[in-house]
Image (cartoon, rainbow, N blue to C red; front, side, top):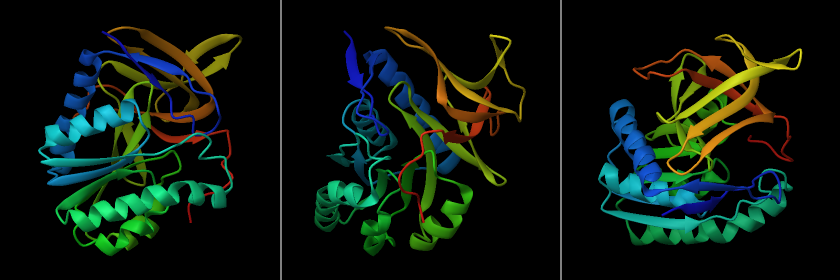
Length: 259
């Protein structure tokens, strides 16, 4: 039994398809639940998720239940071209989504966990005192953005910065010094490579290269190099066993940026 999920296509109008099985989803949910509990002590009462439909929806709803949430509110977000559209169009598109989010927050005063992207977060600020955890994902999120913007809006909130991709799920981010280091599930390997004399070489720790992904799925094996994105190779930290990566940056420039 195979589930086929579309990618979120945030930088284009092209969706690519990834294959998942129940075993794949259970593996990523167990990985995320274990490390979010271990590293951040995440214990949601009720959760509000603003995410793309598909694998993000399936994984994160199950994740919140696994972490102990008694209720989960999911609002599907249309993400096609979201990072390359003018900011005015982005805000126009997400406005109805955030109106619905506000309704949920007003109806259920036990919502204390948010999972979304890092745009227009001001909609949650009236409820900042009760939001304990906020899980965000986005290539443009930096330590500076976290300290100067997010913590100012939500001084009582624990932030978890993940690296999300519909091809494998989530890599968990942990702060080490002035950077966020991401670690992937046990069946996923992400590492940087460079091209030398028409040969592919894995770079050394601390060096930057093109993002390469290998996922040993239950139904499919994925191997590809993303020449639009670069990452830096990192040693494992905080009890993780595989190498991590940091500083993801895409060559596709968005038409707007976080301020």
